Image (cartoon, rainbow, N blue to C red):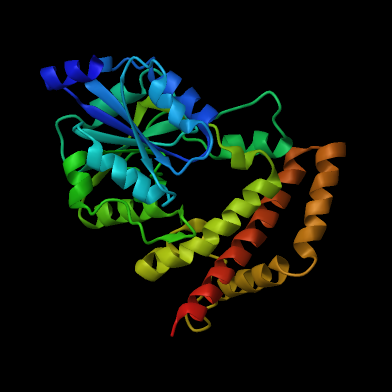
Amino acid sequence: MIEGAIEASGILKVSVIIPTHNRAQSLKSTLQLLSSQTLPLDQFEVIVVDDGSTDDTASVQNDPFPFALNYIHQFNRGSAPARNEGARYARGDTLVFIDDDISLEPNYLQGIVAAREGQNRIIVRGTVLSYRMPEDTPFRALYARLTVDQIMPKCEPFFLDFASNNFAIRREDFFALGQWEEGIAYGGQSLWLDVDLAYRAFQQGYEFRQSAEARCYHRDYAIHDLSTYARRLEMQSRLVTLLFRKHPELECLIPMYRDKTRIVWQGDPPLMIMRKLLRRVSAWGLAPRILEVLVSMLETAWPVEALLSPLYRWIVGAYIYRGYHQGLREMLEKVP
């Protein structure tokens, strides 16, 4: 009934696209929050692209949501193909890409529409707030604060700030830019596709905006503890070599890789060479493991943030370094 009303009125403003894989409960939580949006329910649709789930994700198509829900199933191809598939089915003027672990405040879609409405060649993101849980670990409590945005929007947000789980763009512009890159992936893991698309838009003169009214929370499982977070960044760092192969100029722009890339003996300043050498030494052998044991003891006996924070950063940096250089080796092995 709602789909018919949308087609008749011709006022569909937004298509919300959610890729998902085996996270039915998290997806349903996100969909429930979409039910409370201040944007009228007949002005947006939600497209769930199920990337080969084996749990009960498909059951969402039978749930009584008050908005138009389009469920699409594809074989396990990865999140970039899932997002592109959702965009092909979308009818809204604005595409809003979120993930199945994003919680939206009621004014999120209204804020996105207000920031983008009536203007082309603009990419908009909402403002991410700190998501806290009662069972927060010392690590999660710290990183929940470090990974959020300021309440007020930044002036001209840099394209590196834009993530695929909080990303809005006019449908016509999305296809003009060439959609999400499906080739930056290992084993179906599509990472860095947001930086790639935002950089292509930046090169073509698009404007980037952040909406203070479009507020959301990321229920990120990976920052629950140090081990999970470090291993995710290790995997991301393996994949970033594919991004740098496509856009070599980005290697010096992403802050967490500045002292972890290869040493350029004739180009790096002496201080940077020393930092890279120190990273190389500390990323291998027993050093990271000793630091992890020390952190575990401190978290239990004396969880003081001033002590834990630099140790967290150094351990995570070691995993980033190892992942990045593993990615480089894998690329060299593929070269004929």
